Length: 248
Image (cartoon, rainbow, N blue to C red):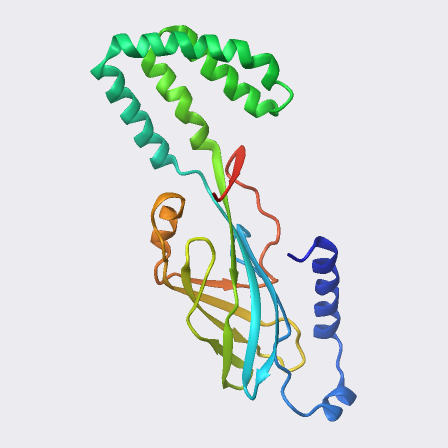
């Protein structure tokens, strides 16, 4: 994955190429420039795309893309988990209270060992669960155990190797390309209104979300979704969460 210094350098190159006129270069290179480096962000900067392309044959490009996507908390999943816990508690309240006593004791024993392994928000969550376990109220514990999921974002990384074919002047369209851990299928489009620009407009369409079970379930809603990636979009994102978990 390209590091921050590469992105800063790339931005500088793009700005310079956009504002500078280069008639001598045009005369020396009358053929159309094909896409080389690819970089862009989605509308709210919760995702980025970057990669490189190179000619593979006449009017054909081979590219390698890496997409990073940060999804917000799965609050519905957390609510459903809490409902299931409460139902299990009501089915056998005595067992639930015994388990709470055991849980509280185990958490007290492990608190000192865990204090150096978690941050301040994690410690706050730990203390909240321990307090709920000590309260003797199973429903309160069910809520405390699932509350972290309401403040957890999910980071996905997808890699694609699309092949593009020229479909017009400064317009390229990819074949259907499968990639990422969820095996989603994308079609990509590269276009440019400026024959001297290094910044190409990027558009992706999810024609098939792929696997939509388990951690991939949130991607089910992306079917037929079109995303436009642009370096003019914000490149800084304020996540709506306190914790980030990686796709597993």
